Amino acid sequence: MMQQVEYTEPTCPLRNQTGSDGVQDFAAILARLSAEQYAAFQAERARCQQEFDQYIAAYGYHT
Image (cartoon, rainbow, N blue to C red; front, top):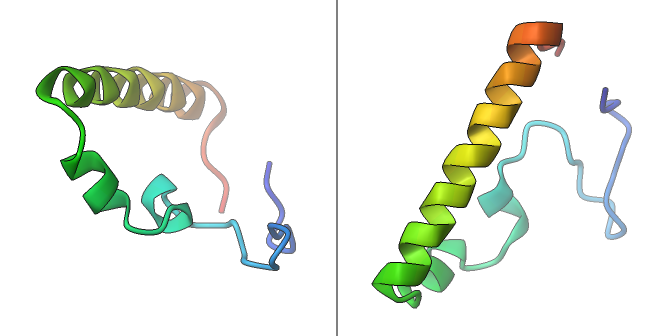
């Protein structure tokens, strides 16, 4: 479990951030993907979300 005091190198708190919070201009990066690349990205994102949901169902989510 991540602790509230965990930080990245530039001392940005990691807790309660989404992936897009950690990448500057994330939406612009996605907009440059081809349709095939974007579909692959969305498939991987869905797979990871499903894995995360299964973990939460098994172990809970403690804030």
